[in-house]
Amino acid sequence: MITFYALASDIAGLNMTEALALLPHDRRQKALRYRSEIDRRLCAYSYLLFQKAIQMIYELTYNGEFSYSEHGKPYMPEHPEIHFNLSHCVKGVACAVGDAPVGVDICEIRDFNDNMAARVLCTNEAERLRHADNKNACFAEIWSRKEAYLKMLGTGIVDGLRDVDTTALSITTQVVGDCLLSMCGGRFEGITRLTIGADYK
Amino acid sequence: MGAYLLNLPMKTYHLQNKKGLEAHMNDNYDKTVQILKRHTKYPAEDMNGDTFLVADLGLSSFDIVNIVCEFEDAFELEIPDKDIRKFQTIGDVVAYIEKQ
Image (cartoon, rainbow over all chains, first blue to last red; front, side, top):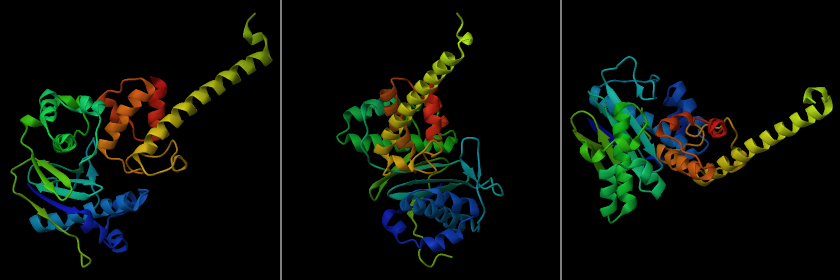
């Protein structure tokens, strides 16, 4: 599994008119539906990042629409052997690709509250949070790892977020810019920042 | 005497109940939108029952779980994790709250 990512400064430089023209119909509609400009950019950028990633790794040019599993995990119907997963937050986008099911999450460090911690954290995770100096960073890391794991499984939010113990799972997390990037599934082969330039074709 | 024999009062009774139900639903809708407003940059006028939480408002999973915690407090109910995926639109949220 290799994970590609881009940060807000990369995304700000995207020419949206050109980017929208490169998207398949459903992705363009999805991007345009968002109320905010930044959400539109993130949606467009994540697809272009995916395109560039599979071009680099598999030498595959793909301009098609995604199909979606029962719980919304995207896949290429023509290439089910290529696994990928996308994520975006306000400050970045990420795309993991690999030969086995993969999950990725990119998130910024944010405030949380006790109710949310009680809903999300298992005993081991709550203990880790209790000892953390930076509570927000610790919670964001656990959240990001849990999200990446559930996205790898393709289940989305399950019944019992607390039943998933991320401290016992093989998940890689790194800091990229102001974000935390978590990924899992298959053999970890690296993380690369990848910019979609104005010359993107 | 059965209410069905009193045509006018029965209508009035029905109307009052309906108004009460609508007021109750509007109250739940308003509370839902107030919570959503705190997590988005959009005013209440930009939302309606058909507004999608993710596809329109761009809310993340983190936002939604956070918001569900606030729904539980505001409406004094428990929302299991498995029900979170039912919340596609604002209308779905209000309908769910009405059912509880």
